[in-house]
Length: 212
Length: 94
Image 1 (cartoon, rainbow over the protein chains, first blue to last red):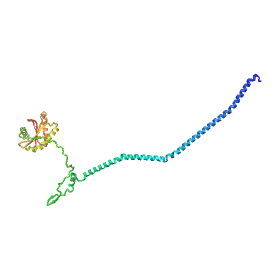
Image 2 (cartoon, helix red, strand yellow):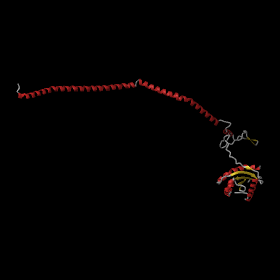
Image 3 (spheres, chains in turn brown, red):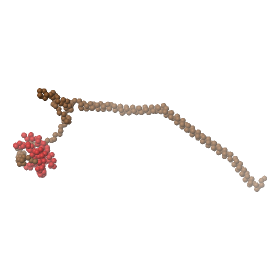
Image 4 (cartoon, each protein chain N blue to C red):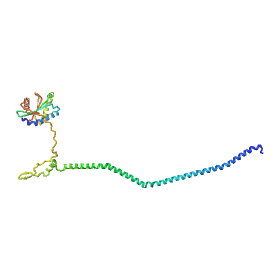
């Protein structure tokens, strides 16, 4: 039996003892838990590193795999298809635009050629209506006349043509004729004119024949 | 009629007259041209003026105008008469 006066001390001691015991029990629990948590964290980090490395490796593999794919016959096939498409478009342009123009260009060339021929023909070839060549022909032997028995004889009966300084057309355009002033011719014996003549002849005689 | 041989000269003078008037600042108020040959053999061209000229008689009868007309017509005599109408007379046969 514990005296009454020692009971508080005993209670306090018991409480301290239980606290110490609790503390001694709790410490290993906390340490264990922290160690486990750290292990989990490290594991997760390691897994993340591995995952990252795997991802990078996969990307590298994809990259390395993709390049050969683009430079492969598939790309060449695509390029060939594009070239065929371009060729088809070019051929279509030729068929739709250029080919219809060819006959027109041929006709234009022919017309131009005929026009040039006509112009050259009119310019250089002898034409009976051309004064140019008649003049030129007359100028070939300008002194073809001969003297026979003291007479000048010209074997070419054509008249000697004189080349004018400016060639004129065969049928020159008619110049506009000025309207001639109407002048009445009246017998000098008629009454008004007879008086006029008498008057002016007297005046002329008085002035000595000249006026002005 | 022998006056016909003067017709070309008469037409030439008749064509020149309006121009000569305008050169002198006068209106060519000409009513008709009359060609006649007198018994003496003088061929006259009468340039008969319109009656409206009488209002400017001094200008149309001025001696310097007659001199100008005669000189422009290569010295052919030019006379002015105002009896029974106004007219110029150009002697063509000289």
